[in-house]
Image 1 (cartoon, one colour):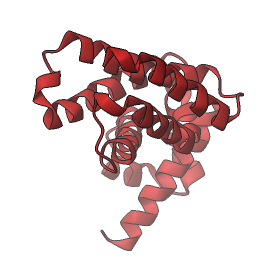
Image 2 (cartoon, one colour):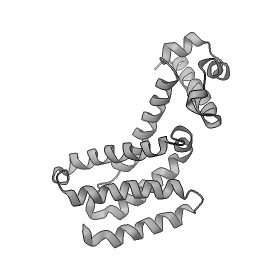
Image 3 (tube, helix red, strand yellow):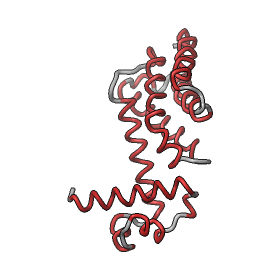
Length: 177
């Protein structure tokens, strides 16, 4: 990619994240974003159709980054959900600033649902037999959604304590899988 395009993309995204951290998505204007990014409107529109496309692009990049760090570094199965839960929580920790900005408010549940769908898809590609196994599906849902919402709703708790508690919960569930 051309260096100028990269710099412009970075300026647009940084300006958007700054504005998004201060106000809801619906209140962000292209005019304000362009002023903050030091670009003109035509430059913005050569990259994105509107603010919503930009937001969706950043959301997709964040989800992809989270999935890469969870699903591709290790071999997980329902046999080691405690280790998977730990990696999932570490991913939340490393992406928390973006999560809190991009998925604030009602969008938090959307992120949890999206992560669950994508992680399950990855699991099913590796372990096709899980797809039709109700118990395994419920366990995966519980692991993903439980870890996500526990972390989101307890961000003030020390990350290591959170990890230990969630790992312990998954180990207690181990007889089920």
